[in-house]
Length: 168
Image 1 (tube, rainbow, N blue to C red):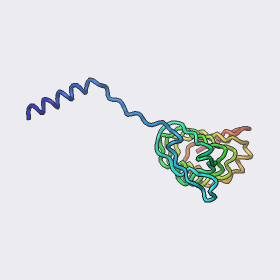
Image 2 (image 1 turned 180 degrees about the vertical axis):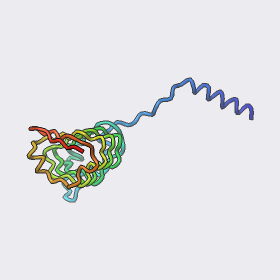
Image 3 (image 1 turned 60 degrees about the horizontal axis):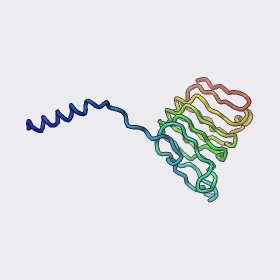
Image 4 (image 1 turned 60 degrees about the vertical axis):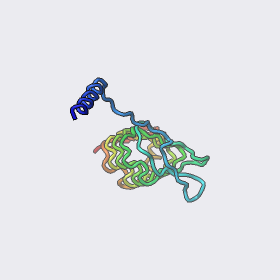
């Protein structure tokens, strides 16, 4: 018993000489996305994202076909994502697509997006900047569910011709 205790103490002594560091977190990558074929058989939607951290750019095509939407809760609880760029092939962002993405601080949405579902950014408490690649008029014409921005802090939508401020 004393010998085993001596070995454990010696091992702990040796290990204490090395600083503890956090394990690296995987960087955000398009390879972490799951795509599903739409009913039309001609395009894909993002259906799921495996948790990672940092910035992510969604690709405009998958298997040679356009990515046209972001599905229901596709990025649910992806708290490590800090920014997302959506390609101009996307026309709709589904319900709760970025639900509870606490680390998300900015998103770039193309002018091709014509609809944003309910609670798309629910609980995105760090999201303060929405970059819309179109005009204020185009943004106002996007069909948005009444609660698309529920539980968000104050934010600014940056359009090509000005800004829209939302206070809490």
